[in-house]
Image (cartoon, rainbow, N blue to C red; front, side, top):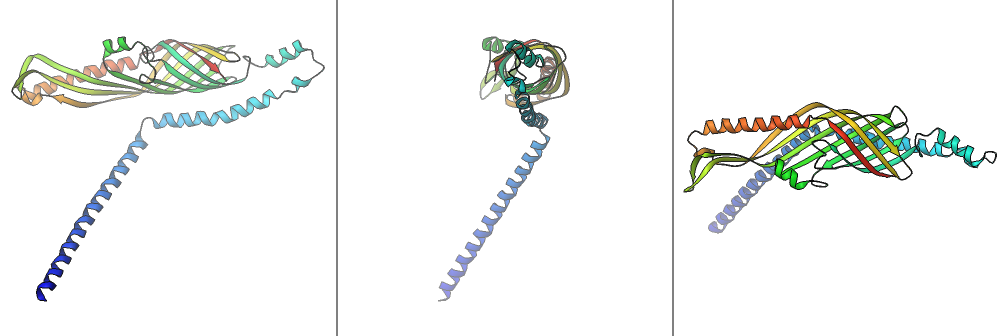
Amino acid sequence: MLTSTLAQINQQVLINAHEASYSKVVDKNLWSILCKSRTILQTCRRSKSMRLRLLLLFFLFLLVPMWVGAQEESASPLDKDPLLDPETEESLQLGGYRFERNFALLFGIQYGLSPLLLTSPGIVLGAYYDPIIVGFELVDSNILSALDDLRKDGIGDVRITNMSVYAKIFIAESFYIAGTSEQRRLDLSNRGYIKYGQRVVVNGKYEPAQAYYDMTIETSAYTVGVGFQKISENMFTSFDFLRWTIPSEQSYSVKNKYNNIKFTEDPDKFRANLEEEQNERRDRWYSSMRLPAAMVFTVGFAF
């Protein structure tokens, strides 16, 4: 009897200990999840793309009053006026419009002399309501690209992205002043720093001292430009003569992939040389991302 009672007590103690241990693990996991969630939220709040998202929402918000205003203007009493001959009626209706229509939704493809557009044509969305055009531009070399061989031979494995919100204001018959807010990003993969004259032994084999890494370059910028645009019944074209870049913030990050630094004779010196090479690469791309764009041509459909 005593033996049975002691066995039951021992079993209960083990169960309680297991439950306590499980509770601690669950509490720890929940705390870890909460901390990670808070970190993600804080990162999202600090994200540089938040400004671009707000501008995009503002653009979508503008579409409603633009469309309503266009509908009101299209309902002109001149449409049914029997006292006007057709030629006079047409001249009166088109006289107040810059183009054949006073409202249009635009979808097109963009290409020009720019570090971003030269190998990656852009996708353009917009809404026209005289005398302004507002819209969104997207460049992503993984979605739409050109001259792939030239890009890979010249700068290696790289992904080019740019998201921008733009506005154009017509100052003459077809000439406009344009401004954009942009988030530019370059993802440079498999960048290497190799010292062929310095050999090290790794797992019994000789190889040059080397380090491989990925680098990300980000630039927040504004642009100001001038151009010319035409909108017909079903098509539109625009030509930006120049877009001057005004960078507001630039940053970079490096992700190490492989290196044999610890096998070198002087690891500190190798790390210093590697950091110097990375900084030089960063500065070159910083300069490229600040270059202005010229002769940017856009063609597409008007709805």
